[in-house]
Length: 375
Ligand SMILES: [Zn+2]
Figure 1 (cartoon, rainbow, N blue to C red):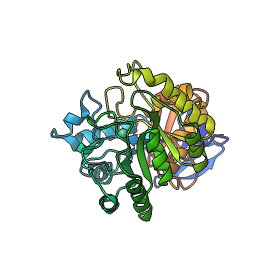
Figure 2 (figure 1 turned 90 degrees about the horizontal axis):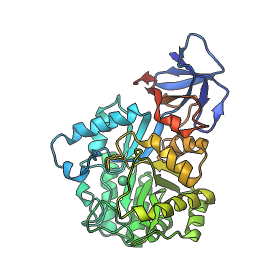
Figure 3 (figure 1 turned 90 degrees about the vertical axis):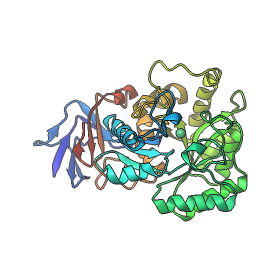
Figure 4 (figure 1 turned 120 degrees about the vertical axis):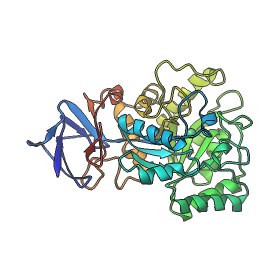
């Protein structure tokens, strides 16, 4: 048993009056108003370790992560990527782009790393978005079979590429990759196995199809058209009513210069985030870490910027999105995303008060995984 003391504790929802956390066997067993004989971290805020709901451990955040997939040492690179998340205070990652179930293997073998949840390879259409990860499937039965395989292999979620995506030549962000019946089959089969399903969806039609099929969360939610962005206000209202999680793609290194295909859309993408937040849609943050040099592993703490500047979130809302809300979306809210008795002692300490300034998340003062200090 040991006790960790901090000037402030954010419990996943709000700052609370307690100043000390009792840890035993990797879990939080009690909160105390204050404590002596504790590991005193000083003028920091202790908060639940962050949860990045969308990463790609298999992508190396280099200029051409897809080309490197086939190079030797993929598993070792994924190990290093996981380590980078943990060092940044991201104690849980959800891998939405696995290859050969390596993220699941890593989760089993790298027990001192972050908690790794994995969807296996995203289910995609033949030669569809990210087909090179190995998740091609078609037809309702083929898709159900793909879901069953992932469930049997120990996936924590199902990911479906409902629309095309930017990084795959020949796939189109503004077009659906599957029929509504195929999308429904995926959701039904995932839920039969007790797994949440998330859909990669850029186009409004894809967002609507995922919502109608009963998906638990939707990635990107960017409302792309072929050459621009077109917000569907009625659909945004329905997203809010449904309680589905919008996993917004956030977190970039400073100095990011958008590619020519995206640059003219940035203001509209920002407006989309603002509309989603204003409508009351449940917003979580997924970094898509690994897909390029501006998205190194462990970038989630930088994601507060877009949630505040674009979506209009308060810093406290950012903290909730990255902790308790993300835990609910990933269905680990019985053990993650809160500082409360019974929860895993996955903790992050940052200097100052991040409920006043989200940028403080970028400077971890201490990280604990299952109660053990890792940095
Ligand atoms: Zn992704």
